[in-house]
Length: 450
Image (cartoon, rainbow, N blue to C red; front, side, top):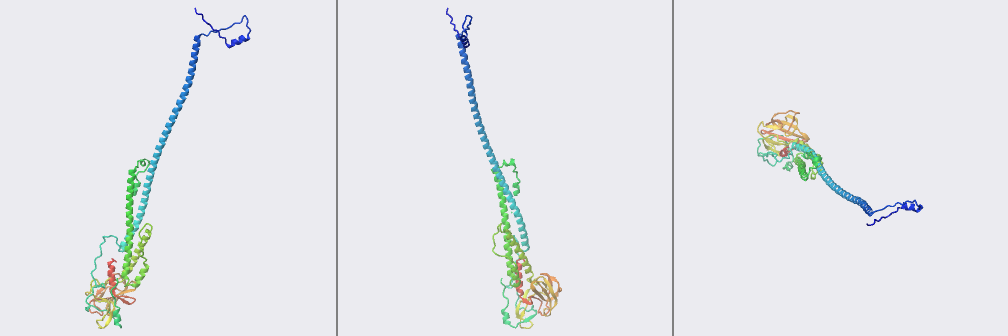
C-alpha cells in the first residue's frame, strides 16, 4: 500500500507558544493536515475571487467610460439641436421683422397719401372758389364755352356812317370856331388799339402679417402707386387751373386798360396804379403755390374793380338801330352856313325810336334846353356827363337814378333840328369828347363779355 504522506503545519501562534513555553512531558502539539485537493480548491477560489474583483472593477470602469461617452454624445446632440432651433428662431424673427417693415412701410405710405389727399382737397376748395370767381368775372376755363356772337362789321370808328351829304337829320347847338384850320388839324383820328384708406384698413394683425408674402405686398404697392398717380394728376390739374386763371385774368385786365386808355386817360392811370398785376410768370410749385393763389386772387379782385369802373363809363350805344348822320368835329352849320364845331354825334332814326342811357348815373335835368329842344342830361362816375337832345318825349325826371340801357326818352326833332334824330354828347369837366371813341371802346368791351 502506498503510504499516505502527512504534512504537519505549525501556525505562528503555536510556534510562539512553543518557543516561549517550556517543553515538557505533558505538552501537546496540534497538527493540521492540508491535503492537495484543499490546496487546489483554495487556489481556484482565490483565482475566482481575484477574477471577480478584477471583473467587477473593470465593469465599473468600462461602464463609466460608456456613460461618459454617451453623455458627451447626448450633449453634442442637444447643442446641435439647440443651434438648429436658434437658426430657425432667427429666420422666423428675420421674416417677422421683414414683414413688419413691409407692413410699416405700407402704412407710412398710406398715411402720406392721406395727407396729400387732404392737402389736395383743401387746394381744390381754393381752386373751386377761384374758378367760380373767375366765371363771375367772365373768365371761363372750359374749352367748350360758346363764343360770343360775331359783331356786325363797322367802319374804323365803330359806327355805321351814313352819307355825309345827308342833311335830313342833323342839329344841335354849334360853337363858332375862330381858327378853322387849326381846328381841322386837331380832329380825332382812329383809336389805337384728383381710396388709400381702403388699403390701410386691410387686416394687418399678427396672424395676417405672417400670411403677407411678396405678391400681396406687390399688389398693395401697385394700388398705392395708382392712388399716388391719381393725386399727382389732380395736383397738376389744380395748379394748371390756377395758372390759367392768373394768365387769363391778367390778360383781361390789360385788355380793358388798353381799351379805356384813350377815352379816360386819368381814370386809366389811376386804375393802373391800383392794379399791381403782371411781372414774370413763375412755374407753380409746392413752394410758391400760396403766392400763386394770392396772385390769382389779387388779379380777380383787380379785374372786378376795373370792370366796375369800365362799365360806369358811357360806352353803350344810346339807340339800338340807326346810322350816324353827322359825326363829332368841325362841320358847316346847317343853319348858319359857317364852319362850326359839332360837339356830339347825330344818329338818324325813325321818329319815336327809343333812347337809352349809355351808363349808370343820375338825371341832372330832363326838360327843354334851347336849341337842344327836349333834352335829358345825366351825370356819371368819374366826372362824365351825357346829353340826349331833340327828344320828342322825356321818360325820366330830375334826380332819378338810371342804369346803362334804361329807357330815358324817344327820338324827335325838337329844337335846332332838320329832322328826327338824336344828338348825343359826352362831356367831362364841361369839355366835349368824341362819342365815337367811347362807342368803339364799348364795342371792344362787349366783345370781352363785359
